[in-house]
Image (cartoon, rainbow over all chains, first blue to last red):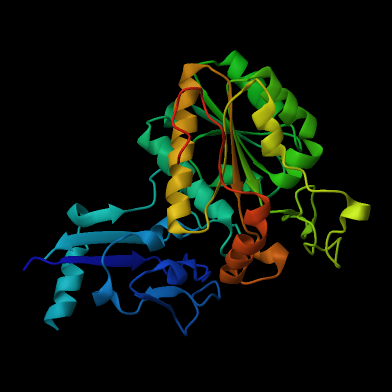
Length: 74
Length: 264
């Protein structure tokens, strides 16, 4: 059965760790990293990317435009 | 293992759903984390790209966090004196009527020092687009009280909350603009949830398309958060905005061209 799968790529060096994407993700894919990026923010990263549906909600609310979204039928 | 391979296979150009607009320069936005300005800048760039307006767009920003916009977008830009963006945009549009001219202003700028320029540009029906970001305070200078600060809201110059007895009432300048005959389309939107961002983008697209009709001024207010100025985390500030700002500044169209559907 064909399944729709999504995946996101986050530019972690440009992420400012505002966590708005975490709050808006319906599939709870994104989490804040324990590590810091170069700017000193706990950047967002796709912790459970196998759950991603490619809805692009995270990218649409991201104030810094650091998220790129892909979607495919598998 | 197989699952991981599949996930990586999805990341291909032909599967792309969403990507930052190519109009945005390869710079990190210098807005604070979680600020609505970033989202509005992003959707504005997307729309200019989608409508193919890059070569004829002229943006005008006055003073405040809104001025930072010129550094991120690959379009022509002019800075105006504090509050004077609608006046400068008027001049640009009258001299170069084939350009798409917009101003990008904050509430301290548009509703305080620039009240007269704003109201008169609206009343003259200048054929420009005003994008107005309302976060209820002066964000760049340290969170002082602005004309749009809601009753009871704390700011650095009203630490016990805005007292309307001594400090007066908030100014709903978008409602004033809607009553003026020169405006063509007046709306109030927000960018705090994915649905709100989609609606705002739709409203902005409408306003940008109306400019080619030469029918008057389009005015878009975007109720936004200011996590740094409000001294909250971005997620808290959005919750606070939903509970306090939105009841005072209800979202929706305030004036639409006659005969068109008002439902968003």
